[in-house]
Length: 265
Image (cartoon, rainbow, N blue to C red; front, side, top):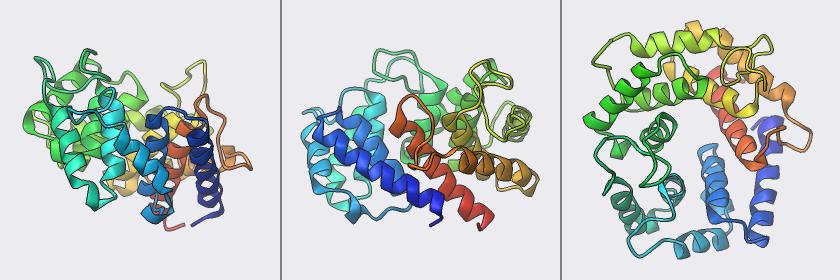
């Protein structure tokens, strides 16, 4: 583990305990814990009180409040095989009564969205099928080359599920190539090149993960630049300057861990 990963991990673990102490909504805590675990943290390092609170917040129908917190809670609990029944109940809730179209929104009543659908099919490939992958393909085609994080979530979902687009067999590569063109001179990513808010840890992390998932050497230089951006912009405390601090830091950590494995840093 690099010094950058170590700083972020320690900071995030402290934040999880502090959020728990302040009775912050469980979705923020379990999302952070899930990304810590995805980054290589041992499941034994997560306090049992957080697991218990996650289980206590599961509703009688198997779900939680909405789709996004449910899918993160599923991902979190999947690191603990003893809670398979709870995971299965949550998955059944997530995919049931999902409306007339495929894909997922932030809640059962929300419009279906690329970021939520892409994230769901990336985190939980067991719920991916031809219909929801095709919905993602069609929707991305309708918004082609719009936002970097939408492109990244689409790439991640397709590559995680080894999906070959029906409309254009080169769609994934073309999307990755477009994503490359959106990288700022700093190495970071914003919602699009030259966005007035500027590059940030979240957009950079998602884009970096997508480019790594391509597993092609021609993206290596962009991956290195994005990795360097994350290292240079990390604060000494282990976090990044981002509105929802633990969200930015947990995505930053996960991207660092995947990039260091890919680049063999």
